[in-house]
Length: 145
Figure 1 (cartoon, rainbow, N blue to C red):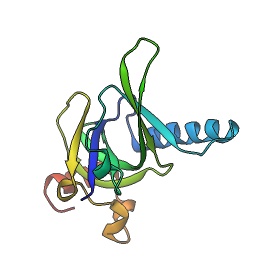
Figure 2: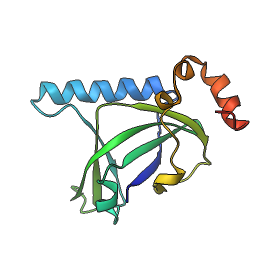
Figure 3: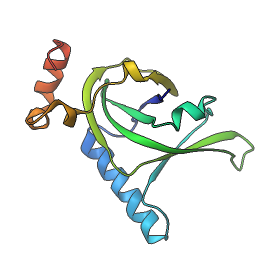
């Protein structure tokens, strides 16, 4: 069964900020002759990697709302130069907008069950992505989107 990760997107105020960062990382990777995906380093190593790599995504919380996701391509545990265990999450190059879902602040990452994951915004049909973010936020809070 597919499982996802949920993480705060620190340093990004909008999906466009996240997309810009992902694009920059992809260009750097391409220039180095590598695949155009981004990575995210985290201290804790997910134990349920089989479920995460079975179609899972990293869902990003931006400004208190789940707003986007990236496909999880690989999970690579490693030890840094200080001898601390860390984990590199290898992410797909596409940032996919999701239906807004409010989340309180938390540290690290959390598992997110498939049934609790917000739907992709593009899956709602024509016009959903054309709505301004604030209107989508209000509609989501009212349970209408």
